[in-house]
Amino acid sequence: MSELDLLAVKAKNNIDSMNNLITQYENFILKCASSITRSYISKSDDEWSIALSAFTEAIKKYSAEKGSFLNFAELVIRRRMIDFMRSKSRYAPEISVNPSLFNTDSQDEEEYSMQSEIAKKVSIVEDNSIKLEITLINEIFSDYGFSFMDLTECSPKSHKTKKSCAKAVVYLIKNPILTSEIKIKKQLPLNIIEKYTKVPRKLLERHRKYIIAALEIMSGDFPNLAGYMEYICQELKNESNNS
Image (cartoon, rainbow, N blue to C red; front, side, top):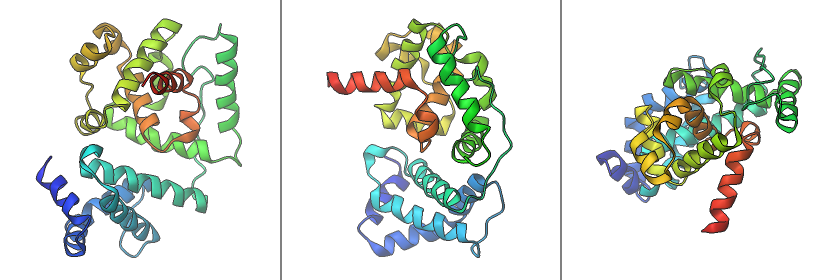
């Protein structure tokens, strides 16, 4: 654990340490709030109160098993800010989604129907929830050097490849410290994933963007998008049944 992580653990049960930590990371809290809302946030804004409350919540809920404290705090802030924005209906982003975006092959009638349903859903102005999720996840993807629309080309096509990618994603989800490192370094630990999942390195490299995208969606607060990642959901279910 880093020195900051140890401080966060201590602050959990010490009000003075908690206040000191909050004061020390006010700029971090503001930066997170501004990044999520895509607008300048000051201490006079409602968003500041939401983000501050979320940071305090992160301190109270933090443990070493959750990986980096700042990464965990950012996740909690993001969740609370998304809830706030949804409640205020502040966003109605204009974004179109290619029907072939999520995974794959137009010859697969069942999956093509699912893909079309996404496009249909995001085209409904009254339903902003999935639009908001796409807007927020696209900002996360940009830190890795790709966009939401890039998933059209890098998503797995065959059943076997989808299963392999799902296996890699589930392995990462089951290892939160490794997931935390990925989110900080913005890189996949290909050697480690290959070693413990037996998924070929070439496949991991070819579908790097998809694996990262799936990991961010499944480990974040994106329930609408997560609902469309059927292979990964099934793999998680299989893992739970086998454990």
